[in-house]
Length: 375
Ligand SMILES: Cc1ncc(COP(=O)(O)O)c(C=O)c1O
Image 1: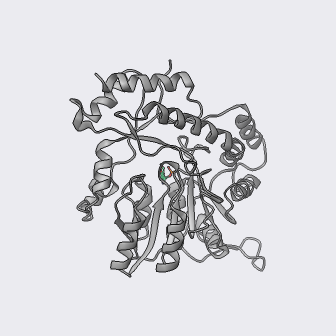
Image 2: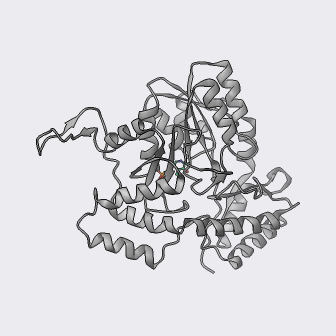
């Protein structure tokens, strides 16, 4: 059996054919595939406007330039990849790390308490962690009651839905972002996108993606004006061709991820391994996270990771609390009281979860886990 990682892409002949077509065409970048991919993402997510960019971090950076002002206080989660709160720092705004709820998402009730205590808080950056939708009625309530701006980081969550509300549709947020890194649901190698229903934000994002340059019909043919400081965060046509081909298969990828999740749910029912949540129709399962109380065992989580690696299985951990990272500690973070996050970090790890994982491989992961944990 080959090494079983925690996540990997699934690339087939049709994906490769799509990329080859672009390589043989006129445009490798700034060509027609960009808008085609954006339009396909718009109809998939239901958001009116989409801007595809170089990666999910670039998406977060541009979103923050549009959403935040220097010094703005922003509620966010410690349970994410660094990029979520780094983007707040990129624009000299101030992340405030709020504890998580039992499902690994930011605790929206605690967010409300923070908003009540400090009316100067301007925004909420929430992550649909592991592919599990944020509580949409609560987001709506917070947005309407406190007038805050909301960004949904849906890097884990494309294809998830809560009833009729789809992830990254921006039904109850100003902007959402997606990532197309190879471990995510669909890949473009590197890649990301921002979704929104605001025409004004969309137009700003387009300008910021390309150096802050503006070109209007009344200008001379060579002319362009730089009106603000932008970036080169463009994605290529090569990447978008891959994205378009992958997007067609997204629903079958998710169906397979759900099948895998249900098998894990059944295997861990009433056992020493506790799934972060069991299938209830909301998650598109970028990750399958479990928790084990290691205080009950004579070995540590690091020992478990090493033992499984020796047996050809790659576990991963999502996430080390961002506020406890040395850089953040240097900024004065790390002393927040986030007991749920702290306990979660002690106990959590992620199991292999990707469409290509076979039933046989999954059974091997389950058996090996129990074997090692039971000594
Ligand atoms: C929740 C979350 N947000 C943002 C990102 C950044 O995306 P990218 O790696 O495409 O820059 C990631 C990537 O791992 C992520 O997991």
